[in-house]
Length: 217
Image (cartoon, rainbow, N blue to C red; front, side, top):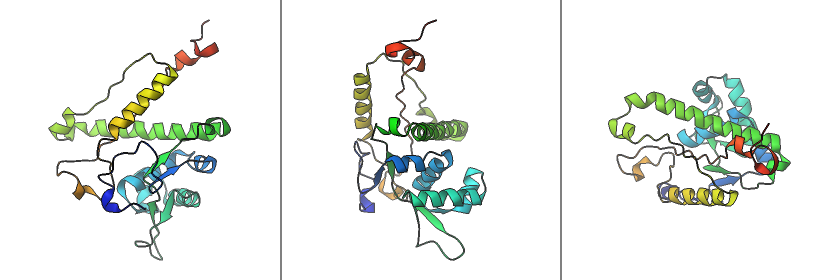
């Protein structure tokens, strides 16, 4: 495990970090093919260790539901019990990793349903985060309201150019300070948590029909 003091200043990686990140295999992909599990892992990574009861309150579900899914996530290695906080009456859980990577593209064919469910769950979390953040925008300090960004750009690219674009965008993000729970003191006083969501998606209408050409009737 990397030294905790190094985490806030380590750039967002262009490649998975074996010390902090997990690369999904088929088992892991199936374990995360549920929207609630994706949200549970996200909450633990962002806000630190918690209990099933507190997580249930944050998610608006029953504690029995969160307990079940936390156990499933623990079996798959995504969360672990926090022995420093837990006791005989209440179990605390922590995230086992900082980031999840889906690098094996063959899983899209080998586990199509799980891959679709996982990606759909991630997209749902992104949409929820956007809605909540924009809903709170009127009460944000003016400097933060002024830098909110919700843009989309329509380009015409080949698959190779699209891969190149994604790599360039990740390289830009790598120049900035990576978020680490509990390490706020190592950042400037006016720094806050910022979520950057990157979607590089072909237009569905443009990928229908033979040879990727738009379908025509």
